[in-house]
Length: 250
Ligand code: ADP
Ligand code: MG
Image (cartoon, rainbow, N blue to C red; front, side, top):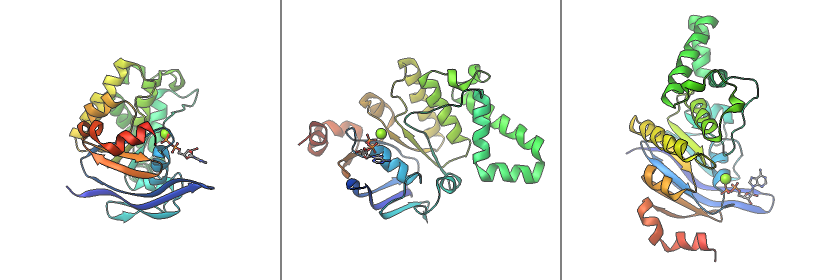
């Protein structure tokens, strides 16, 4: 398998707080990888640096052979990396469909090409069709005309994935997709991610729920105090000394 994302010797500090010290890993095309680690170990910070929401202090980030660590978050989305947030917030008045369609306009390539070739009205229809197909695939068709702010926690997470997918990413990074989510919807999220992965999507998931990790992921990367301490299959985690040490402290 070819390497889709390469992170090399990445370091990031906030003031004197060295959150990521020397982080290196590769994600191959087609993988579905869990990013684990105790609270405060730097998982969200790692996602934020890879997706351009935080600048790195040292190291490099390469997506499909192209350096992306100096690009804006916007350009990184364009170059094929979609993400969701740990705590999705939704505009109060917009419907679920409108939120999904608005995500298309963030994707410069999709929107610009359409505007230039078919005009505004047809471009809007194309965005609506694409949003409708994704809302259907992610089990949100029945709520598409409701205000997005009224969705349950799990539905907001699914809508976050829809928005990320509007940009046709090759790599999808999810921050705690099941935290606070009702068990029924949690299983829906498992199915959705498996289906996306079978269709070829590469996925990196920050997640605490070990059952979820075992059901979904083919490999785990474990962070502890700014370093990667393990890269192994989910079933190997419980016998890995450095993983146990990370979670038990010491
Ligand atoms: P995790 O997602 O693994 O729980 P985080 O990446 O959120 O961990 O946080 C790791 C550390 O970085 C924490 O000590 C946190 O306080 C600090 N941190 C994260 N983001 C910022 C920020 N924007 N400014 C200052 N400190 C931050
Ligand atoms: Mg976090």
